Image (tube, rainbow, N blue to C red; front, side, top):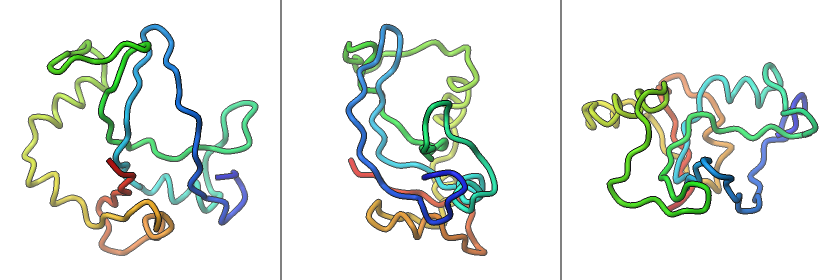
Length: 132
């Protein structure tokens, strides 16, 4: 979306990234839509990275690791577990799946992304389904 321009949220394709040594390539099948995303879409908050006109939404993303620095990830491989994201992922992996699923109040397919950005009074977590 273009910051400060209400109604500029859009789905866009980007070139496949090529991770540098030590960077992680992740496939993203879904992402959570939160109040911050809605504030950004309304032009109330956020800024694009330096030199960019648009800001890419999706800080609550679900991902499947695909590779590190061009090397595929082996099944059962583990990363370092001493950083906050790793600790959060470990806690979520141990959480009650039924309880986590109960927090999702709506699932919206990508082609109807505008619906995910609309606030409903009963929203706890809205999930935008990006595909497989």
